[in-house]
Image 1: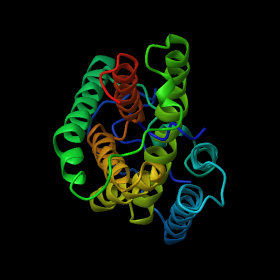
Image 2: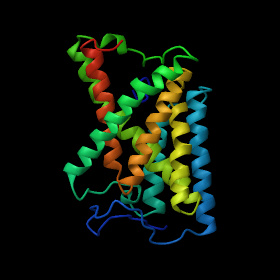
Image 3: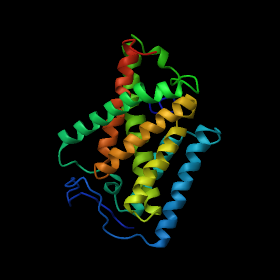
Image 4: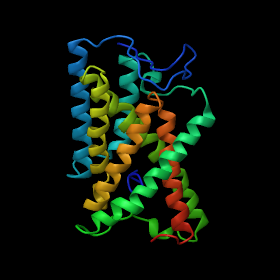
Length: 248
């Protein structure tokens, strides 16, 4: 489950003037200047330092609220609005929800059928977030975690990692298709280290989750709602499994 132990050029791909999606494909409205690309690289590197500094070395406060705030401010000042990071009304909420459910199912199945069996040959099982042992059969605690899942994890992490860091990585590469896919990989690595507390197996598992969420983000025309919903569905399933004793 995602991090639950931790509390001037616009680009509107697939969007319309009212902010809704019309296409799943990326489009580039204007090229970035070299200066803008260097600034984007600096933001990405700063974000990477924040992620590693908190999760690995514990010398920086929790990265999620920091990236959340920096990302929102950065897109407001540099891109003119949050629609540039993916906060746009989808053309079809039904389609968005179905894609999110499919991504969540893929992440859960890959974790259970591929990642967990493979990593078990090398490392101990991934560690659960602190306090999860109190969820089983306790509706009050489960509801508290449910709220945390849909705020801190789904909204906070997706805005910070996919909405902010992934876009700045792609901006540094000139917003080419290759730059976006490289951004998916780089941010997935950071997302894995964002769950460093889980141990090596958990880092790999979270990195795989990051790849799926990043891929869905790109293929949906960079609509952040798809990732937010997928992330929320993934962690909600995990909560239900723990509550009913389906998993340890």
